[in-house]
Length: 438
Image 1: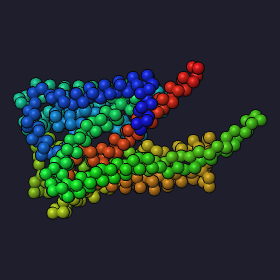
Image 2: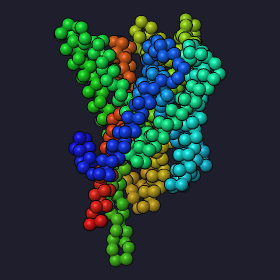
Image 3: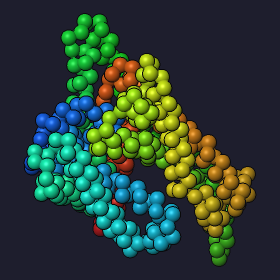
Image 4: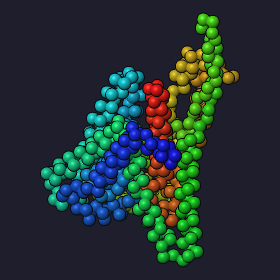
């Protein structure tokens, strides 16, 4: 990785792109520290300290602390991520969107424009809910229509600016702009999380206990990172053989290739879907100022909140953990089914004269790919569940709350690997250009 970056800085064009990316990320981090005018920072600091775990903790992690600071970038990139997922799902469900998706560059531009409009609409709705929900509880120094409107405009504008920065990084930087912004936000929270763990388990403890605690913390973090790297890189290669064709006096084709089926085909999407579905009622109740009680509604809210999982004194709360595991596995199958079409791949292989050794072309090939994919999805979903649950387990048992949980590490590892591949491809293209110019 370091060798790739070192070589990239030797090339002027790529060095310019890297510097531009770094400058844009500095702007994002500065905006994450600028507070919204007219808010009560002390109120929100106290409120967040009581609700830092669960959905709001993860939301704060992916916004890089912007939410906790209630800055102008408090919504950050989250409306864009949500709108992108919605458009991707609609591409499968609505024929018109599917046509745009297949309509080449012009169609993708239209989908991008729709995604931007939806991002602004979601930002307005989310900022309005925050301004009214938190404002009534004391977030706004003066809770009136003017301050609510100003807060909504500020949050919406901040989210739009972050979206614009992400697109500029994609266009003029190293690419993958939205994902890079998301990753730098998560990375920015790691030092404070490590400091919190150090103060909680190491600082002021006996030497033997402190050394053991530090060793366990390091081993767990390294172990999760290794597991994530393996999960992201693992794939099943399906061999493909192409038939020889006679063109004139020459025979062409006959090459061997493969279809790479990734173990973690859906990426981090199943975890995000599962968390969002479980925490939606909790978030709505928090915005409305409703907290859990002793009634059936309060018990359901307690079960849905991951801060109450692995609570052996109240085992009924672990029902929420079981639901969470089932949802992750179900969403892994669902998301893969709408993004990977075995029948389309089998048809394309048949048209190109390709076949899987021992499998007949056409529907038998499609059925074989679907069967293999089902096995692989389950393995990937189980891996996702393990990565996601390890931090939750230590939070529930040892009260070791951190923002860089399994979900965050999957995002970080995936984006870093993808960005390095893009930098290497840009270097390769540049070398080809130099060769052609010579």
